[in-house]
Image (tube, rainbow, N blue to C red; front, side, top):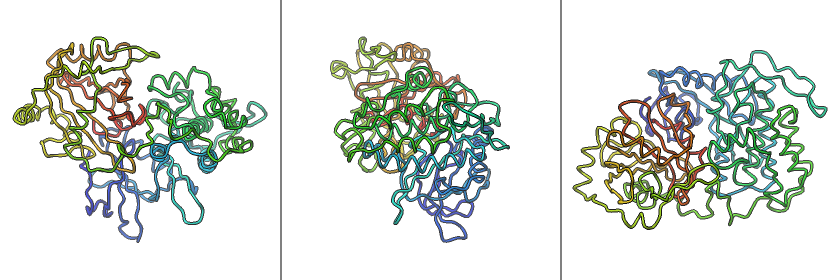
Length: 527
């Protein structure tokens, strides 16, 4: 994996303008085309280029989109390899993804959701007619472009885990008088449901069964549900979302939004049926059914003053301001963090709804004794530099350096008296992802004495099962936990012997991101 490109740098003939952000497999830059007067989105594979699976998915994204031609699908322009680094140039969309809009503005009015849904449904149906199943439809993969004359234009992007078959799908009689699409062949012979975002994945995808266009329809329904309500149909941890998709009753939209017409709620429920045969024949048919009974009030979403606690949405802009990320941010993260396994009290872990809540009492904070001075910080940097060196692309390597997404770190050796298992020291870090209204990501590296890590982790996670992140292979495990102040956070451990004494914790200061969003961030980061 190469270093980030800098503004003005030339790569494969493209002159980099600025970094747009990171996707599931690659960094994306705005860059000037080498021969045409246009700006493009240049996507570079940031996963290990020796990872044949990641390289194949990256290559497949270009192959898949090149076979499609639709105004609501982000277009691929070219591809290549430069100094061993695969790249794709794509249409640059002047806009923002729907997930960012949801975080910044809250739930959307029904008319806007219907307009977005109809455009994305048309794009997905076009892909399905060519035998392509997207498999990762979600708000973050829907770009909302600004146009002068046509209003808002929605485009679907990120076909990195799509699947395609060589022959068009076969239509066959379906339930309720419709027609359905025969299951598309999976060219790898294996469906990796975990790689998709669990909050929006279909039951058949999560079960490893064959998927067709009705799987995308299910994910589109979950996406539109989230745009209307501010959260997915099964909010909470990844494990809870998976259970919900597989076994829980389909949620009623009109119970969450009583002002939504019954026909809209019924169409949403049908598209989210556990049985693909009970869904609509096409995505467009689903959105037309939504629209048929849609006579909404001025705003069909819940009020901005009461966002769903599952989303971490905020009505205020202060904590999502665009202040520069400096070392002081790491200090703020330390002061406001209040979560993590080093803050556990004897009574601080409670089980609610099948998952632990990691609590921090005022007593625990009061008994924290800080021994970290300026001289101590210098000594900790000297001690911890070899440890940070295990993640040279993630953490800064010097006190004034910056790591992934501008990450800065502050060392700390606090030892609260309540802590059952003491750590040696930790680095409290903060990163600022690129993009509009992106919150600070807190990333803390905790260092234990040999043999202590597993005891500390066991006390924190209880019965929560570990989940893999396929983008990183089998080298790490993640545990998805909840703090009443910091919201969702993820604990990361490693299987390699040289990292047995370390834990990495990822979250946001006040729960701005969901588990799925944190999961995606870890998948894209150089862990």
